[in-house]
Amino acid sequence: MKNQVVMITGGAKGIGRACAEAFLKHGASVSLISRTTQELENAKATLSGKVVTHCGDMSDPKVVKAWFELTRKELGSPTVLVNNAATFLNKRVIEQSLEDWERVIRINLTGTFLCAQEFFRCAKEKSGKRSIVNISSLAGIRGTEKFPGLSSYVASKFGVVGLTEALAVEGKALGVRVNCIAPGAVDTEMLRKAAPQLKADAMPADIAKIVVFLSDPEQAGVVSGSTVELFTNG
View 1 (cartoon, rainbow, N blue to C red):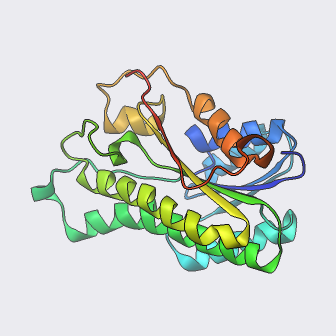
View 2 (view 1 turned 45 degrees about the horizontal axis):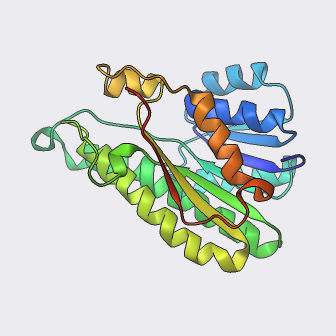
């Protein structure tokens, strides 16, 4: 992964932060986006390597464009995109407002689409092997246990899996492989808030290893359109 330019959404903490650490160790440069300035500053101060940060909501097309422009200016054309950013709402269907529902879908699914769209545009301008790894969840996999109050999150993560398959088809002509990881319980702040009853054995670094593998054309080869389901202990 040496000399690769990696863009990571939700990169200031949790799985995104672990991915940044893993890619930097392999010689890549990374560009992180998050909605929290302080968390980004903390990440940049503690990560070793070339790191660019941008604060904003990547469900906003203008923010996404600005982030990609910054990355290209500071690091060069991106070769890897990790769509990790997500949010959740713990409200039963009958209690949700339309605004509640749309906010989760906008961040988890629309944000993934917008970032992939800009990444495809970069690939169209400059040829080369590229990769997108989307982070879904076992909540977005048919037949797995679902929890009350997380309907919008579940729907958004099903959408990420479907979007991955569609992107893989369109990305082939651009030299972009697109894959997805659907982990179960991972020890993150989001899990502790969304499902505190679950005790996770998997750590963010465990997911980051798989992200790096799928991103590396030397390791993953022609793998594209796949969703890796991780039934972690919880």
